[in-house]
Amino acid sequence: MNPNFDAITRAKLLYGSLPIIECSDEARALRYLEPRLNENGVVELVGKCWNPDVETWMERSLPLPSADKQMGDVDDFSAPKRLVDDLVKSDSIAKSVSVHNFTSLCSTEEPYIVHSIWPTPNKGYNAKHLLKILEKLRWLCFYFPNGKPRPSPLSLLGFATDSAGFLLPAAISTLTPTDLHIREGVYFLDLCVPDERFVAPYYSNLPFIAFLDWDHERREI
Image (cartoon, rainbow, N blue to C red; front, side, top):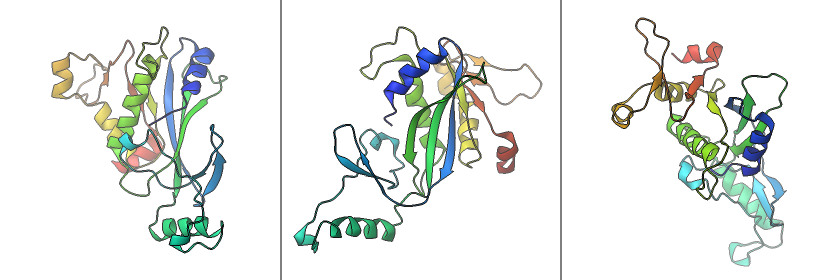
């Protein structure tokens, strides 16, 4: 996952030391490819599904193809058409887009900051992939991409979700202690109520809490 690092810097300048959460939303897409000019001046196509394996997300690029006579292209329009036909045939054009942003927990007046957008895989994308994204994001809140500690990290308190079905097991996994947590000495925040099942782990000086869209998520139980 390669988020917009400038967005993380802007979030720190905007929110200061206030606690923030990471919010995700799955938006429906119209299933077409859109050309974009990247920062290097190269035209790339956006709209192809990404591989569910998050480890492959650091470098995702679909360049605009050029005519290839060996592939039967007769002009510059034939190559893009061939690409689109192949993507349609393999059901590889995204049906939805995942939008991730930072939101302040202490003010309704502060704007949110989008830090990542990508075409969601049509299949094979589940809770473990979201957890991998959140793990990477937590790390980036405390460290620069080169591994150098941030002198003033973002106060990330957790994440909020929409109604996608795989988000509930991701939240359950996040709020359930494991043997590894115990061995590593992780502390947890609980409510001290009878039969309490879920707790929030402390990966930093703040607990990491899952804020569920209850009206939707309860339908998945």
